Each structure stands twice: as structure tokens, then as C-alpha cells.
Picture 1 (spheres, rainbow over the protein chains, first blue to last red):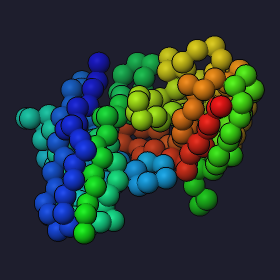
Picture 2 (cartoon, rainbow over the protein chains, first blue to last red):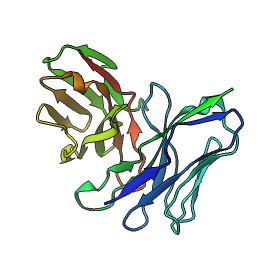
Picture 3 (tube, rainbow over the protein chains, first blue to last red):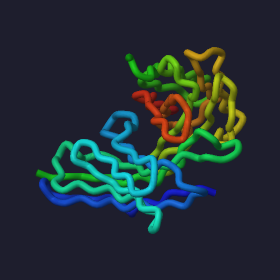
Length: 115
Length: 114
């Protein structure tokens, strides 16, 4: 079945450092790919998405490129801020059978940014 | 748009009591999802509906849990009887469906069972 694997966390960085959170997936075909973010005390919200191979999703300074050759969708940001401290989830939608419409999430990566 | 609305935001109850969590999805969304989040198990999908019909309830932990969606604008998740291990944050989410559709999450209900 479809699955998503994220890098182990937590990740701790200083402000203005470069961020990479790795995400790889296994799926049938070429699904859309998502990054969700969960700020403390809140629900998840969509950060960015890519709907086909080689697409780059971007939002709030974050970027991720859909790489079908490596089945990856790594999240990057050039200069993190304290306000980026949150939990980040990689996700892909299930395309087949009775699971159509639901998302498979990675385990989440906790990011803490210090001033 | 008000977003996905959940109530109550916090619930504290004693073991053995019935708990009912409520969700109002975004108008026009065809899919509704119930999730549970804990430190130990992370984010788990409990059940989801399409056009008010339950599609997959394989994540419901046991018979103590039940969910209903009587109409397109309301869903409930009920736990009866509640146990301390049910303590978690429960999220409701909705989407328009389709493989590129975003899920919109509510703020969650923090349940504590003592």
C-alpha cells in the first residue's frame, strides 16, 4: 500500500539556519504530494502541495519539489524563523479502492527554532 | 468562511462516562474525517465519510467508539464508555474530495479522561 517516510526528528536549529526535512513515498502512479504544518495548539493546515512530477510547491519561504525518480518531496527553507517552530507532516492521497480520498501522513517532524 | 468548527474545545470526564464530540464541516465539502492525535501514536485516522456515508472505519479502535453524520453539516464522534487511554486531541477535517484536494482541519477537541 501507499506509504510516506519522514526523517527522524526532532530538529533543532538556530534562527536563519537552512532547513531540510526529508520525505520519501511509495505509491501507485503519481499522486499529488502535500506538506502540512501544525503550530502549537492548532490543527494541521496545508503548507504547500505539488500535483505532478517536477512541480515545485512553495509558500511562506518553504519549497518542495516533486521528484518521481527518487520518489521524494523534501521540504526546504533557506532561513528559518522562531515562528516556524511547529510539527511538519508529509502526506499523499490514496487513489485506489475503498481508501479513495483519504491521506496517508508521515509520522511528523518536530522543528524547534531558537533565537 | 468560518472553517471547520469543533465543540467542545476541551472536555474533562471521568472514566465510564459517555463523551460526544461534534463537528461542523465547511459548507460544500463532500468528505469528513475524524482523527486522533497522541504523543505515543501520533496522528491516526479513525473514520471518514463521503456524502454522509461512512467509507472506512477501520481506524476506530473498538466498539466503544461510534461516529455518525446525519446530514452534510454535522457529525458526531461518541465514546461510550470512556477510558483514560482515550485521552487525546481529536480533530475533524473536511475536503471537497479529489486527489489534489486540501483537507481543512478544525482546532481539535482535547479530551481528558480521569
